[in-house]
Structures are given as C-alpha cells and as structure tokens.
Image (cartoon, rainbow, N blue to C red; front, side, top):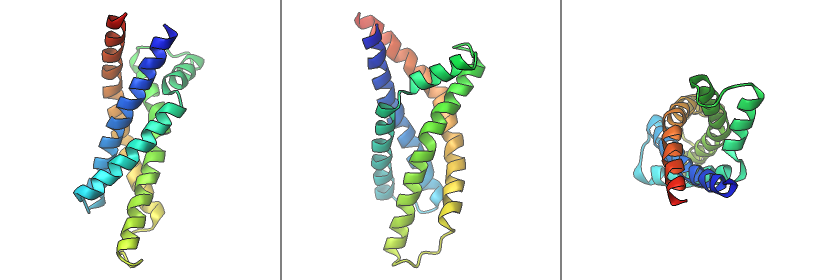
Length: 159
C-alpha cells in the first residue's frame, strides 16, 4: 500500500509539475507583452525541469497532509482543499516565477545590449508572482483533486 502511495505521489508530481509549468509559462510570456513561441518553449522546458525537481525533492502530499493534520483540518472538506492548494502554490509558484522572470529579464538585457527599457527586476518579479500565484492556486485547487482521483482509481484497478 505504501509503495502504491509513493507511486501515486511521483505520478502526481510529474503531472502537476507539467501542468503548472505549462500554465505559468503561458501566463508569464503572455503578460510580459513580448510573447514568442521560442520564448514560451524555453520557458516551459525550464519551468518543467524546476517543477519536477521540486516535486521529487519535496513530498507535497506528505507536507500538505501533515500541516493540515497539525492544524486539525479534515481531509476532503473545502477549507482543507483551500489550505492544501495554498501550501502547494507557496512551494511551487515563487521558485518557478523567480526563474522565469530572471530568465526573461536576462534574455531581454542580453538581446538589447543592456539597453532594454524595462521596469526594475523586483517590480517585474512581484507583478508576475501575484498573477502566477492566483493562476497557480486555481489550477491546483481545480486540477489536483481530479488527477488524484484518476491516479487512485488507476492504481487500485491494477491491484
């Protein structure tokens, strides 16, 4: 049973990592005002690598489950799902957003020879972080239970 749960956790990390990367890369490149397909693809690949590393290093299910249990939240209730989504969002979104904004900022500066007319890095980061945090929260809140249900069903059908 524990091995099945680990397998489900790994599959969730992969699927949520790819979905978060896709959504945050798309939102980030669209809100930058300079959407290009190559920029989006590079952003998506970099973001996916970061998401997968986070997902395999940090057992998100155990972290959220442990914190919710510690706070006395009952699994399956809407309030608990909100807290679980916030915890996952706080773990993933700042790291991915920082990497994406740093990448975009450095590319713009490099391509312009340091003459790009952009707001300061911190302003770009905070604006993007806010937008991506909201998008990430709703993505996690809506998609994670659906994926978990599918993976649990698939896992127990195999037994």
